[in-house]
Length: 160
Image (cartoon, rainbow, N blue to C red; front, side, top):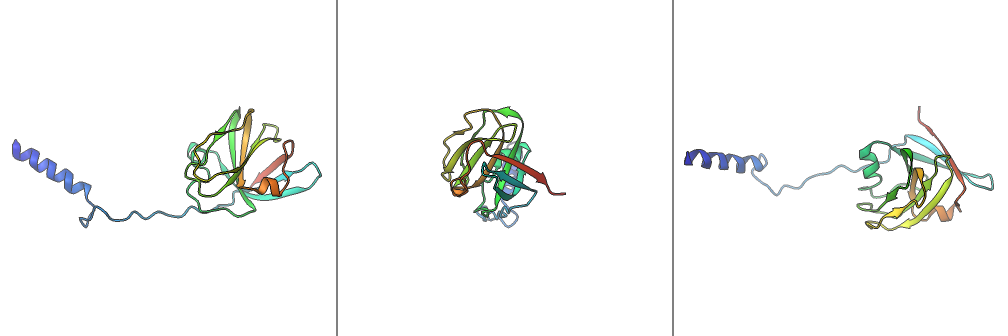
C-alpha cells in the first residue's frame, strides 16, 4: 500500500509538469483586437452627430471584461454595453490599460451621466447614479473634446 501512494504522488507531480519537464515555461497570450460589430452616432443638441465604430458587450463574459486587457482603441471606436432592463450600473477600471469616458445612457437612449477620464487600473466604483440601460465606453477625454452633454442622445445599427 505504501508503494501505491508513492506511485500515485509521483504521478501527480509528473502530471503537473509540462511535456518537457520545465514548469517555468512562459505562457503566451493573444492580443485582443477591436472587431467592428456596428456603428453608433451621438446626436448632439446642435444637430451635429459624432460617428463611431462599436463592439457590443452583451454576454456575461463580454460585460464583465469590457475593454480590459487591451492596449488601446482608436478615437473613432467604442464599446456599447447592452443591458436587458434599466438599473443603476457601476463600472470600474480593473485591468483596463488606458483612460476611458464611461457614458451612461437611459432606456430612451439619452445620455444621463458621464464618468469622464476614468483612470487605468483603478478599482473605484463609477456609478451611473440613475437607472440606465446602455453604457458607452470611449477613449478618455473624448466626451469633453466632442462637447458631449447630458441630454444628448445615441442611435446605433449592427453590421449586417
